[in-house]
Amino acid sequence: MALAVMTVCTGNMCRSPLAERLLAARAAEAGLEVVVDSAGTRAANGVEIHRETRRVLEGYGGNAGDFASRLLSSRLLTGRDLVLTATRAHRNAVQEIAPLLWKRTYTLLEAARLADADESLTLAGLARARLGIDTDDPAMDVEDPIGREPEVFDRTGAQISDAVDSIVRLLARG
Image (cartoon, rainbow, N blue to C red; front, side, top):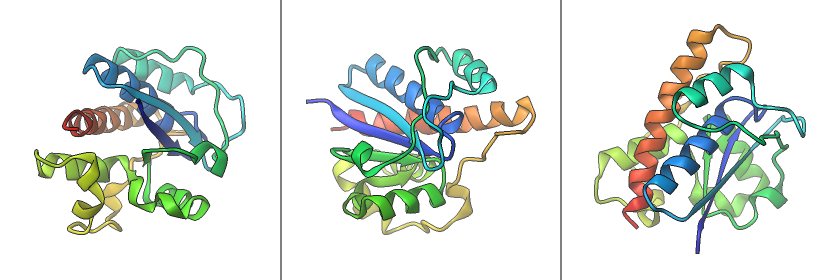
């Protein structure tokens, strides 16, 4: 059975689609059964991926085709094994909408940091491992590139790409 993952940001045009598409592609390359999609806490439904995000995504070998933004809802969160958010505020929004998912909801950078800190950590141990870090650390947030210059999109892309690699390694551990 495939693992169900949701990535979340604000508008669902930049950070979460980039994480969604990179995670899906890299999990497939690793032979993992993972279904990934995304939504935004303040998204308008049906908006295309941002042109700079498309550029960054394609630069990492990802595919931006057939993407349309979606507003985050409790229905979209149903059945998720893992929810990865761009920021702590997004993590809090998910936990407010779906309180039972708190043990499965992390910022991308939080999950990556935990995965990198312990190479024996599995998805099942992630919630326990989180007790050992400062979850309110601003360094857990991926910078929002919207309305900014292309270099910010590049920086955000590198941050998300590195985090996705760490998360794929975590998922591959079982």
